[in-house]
Structures are given as structure tokens and as C-alpha cells.
Image (tube, rainbow, N blue to C red; front, top):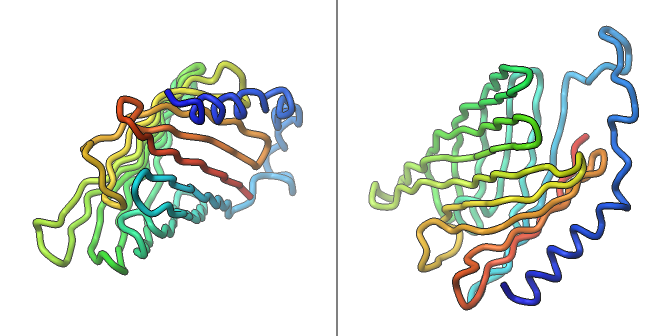
Length: 217
């Protein structure tokens, strides 16, 4: 692992003591109270990619949920200068082992055009979490351009605000000699703010670095 990668992970881990306060200190609102969870919830994230020998780029995502209905728009995900809009329905189950599954369908437009059925899911148990967001793009330019995208993480939470683990992605937004990219991740959360770093292709001479900032409101 390069010195740059080690330094970036160390910065995230050292930020932990500053973020040790947690939302759990505030008791949940009683059912039916005016402070109960609002009907709409929103999330916005920005992933910044530093790709060796290629163009660096920013990938923003905006999500809106109302009850079990799920809406999402993304840019620079399926391809650079390409947007996508999604609609899905969320299913939830379990208490000790929590499962959340959201099938969705999206339209893709820009440099790449097509339709993409997909899904996201999260499985949590104890301090472990497995999450994945995947889609299969049917490219209007021809079936030879169809592509399966995925971003998956397996993380452990040694503390409520701190996580670290493994990450896998398959993308066509940039080109590599690796079909499925594997790497490490570390992140911290404080109330509505989440910050994370990702390092892919550790067995290659040059690594791909991704940094994300997300807020929920």
C-alpha cells in the first residue's frame, strides 16, 4: 500500500475521537409526536474519483424517500457526462438481523442511453453490515454494450461512528485492466454527516482513490 493510501486511512481513523458523540444520546421521539420522523427523507452524496492515467471526476447522487417509495438521481455513474433517474420500492424485515431490499428501475441518458433494472440491499447483524447497489444496463446503442454495474461493501463497526472493511466495484465509467475492482474502505459518521475513503487495486502499481461525503436530512 502506498504512503498516500496509508496517510488517508490514518486521517479518517484519527478523526474518530472528534466524532465520538452520537445521535443515540437523544431518546427517540414517541409515536405520534410532532418530532416523529418526517414523511420525506433526503440524502445527498458526492464521490470524487482519482483514477491513474485517466480523467479524475465527481459523481453526485441525490436520494429522496417517502415511506417505502424510493427516488434517486445520479450523474457520472453509468458513464461520464451521463445521468440516470430511478424509482423503487423498499422492503424491510428483521430486528436482530435487519434486512432492507429495494428493487428499482432507472432510465439512463447522456453519453450512454438505456434502461436499467437494479436493486440495493443492506443486511446488518451485530456490528457487521453487508450492502450492495447493482444494476444491469440495457444500452440502446446495442446489446454488445450492455453492462452489469455493482458497488458492494462488507464493513465492521468497532464503534458506532467508525467502520472499516472491504469494497468491490464493477464500472464502465473509467477503464482498467481489472474486471472487478477490489479494495479497502474506512469511514466515520457524525449525526447527519458521513465521510469515507476507498482504495482500489492494491495489487497494481497505481491505485484508484475514491473519497465520499454524504449528508442526510
